[in-house]
Image 1 (cartoon, rainbow, N blue to C red):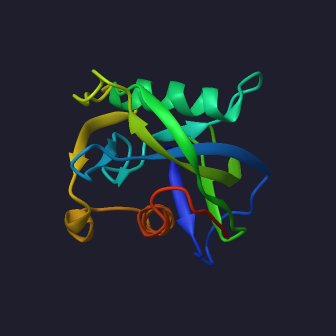
Image 2: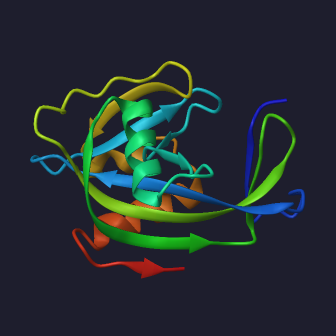
Length: 160
């Protein structure tokens, strides 16, 4: 079974747990947004992932962004906090979770500007002009998070 993500789908399985995750809206000096393409579904998203036991939110964010894109980041602040019972993810192992997500504004650290995918979770990593977002396959929940981050760049946040 592959990972499945459901967004307001009446056929979605019920969540067993709420799981914390973090994602980064990273913009470079040209205003481009760092996105990664998932291996499992081919969709583009902000780099990020689950917070593990023992992690801080920012530590998990920096680790996930570096793993998925090869970019080292500095965190600027929170762009949004999201939890929606209509958004659930079934893992490869079959566990169903409702994400509790914190998205952050971030910037690449100096000297860390050439993205590279990890070829495990991500098949591509690139700086994308925000004007191109509508042409890319992006999950509806992620599209909302990206839109909020871009609308509030930098520093203002939203809670949904």
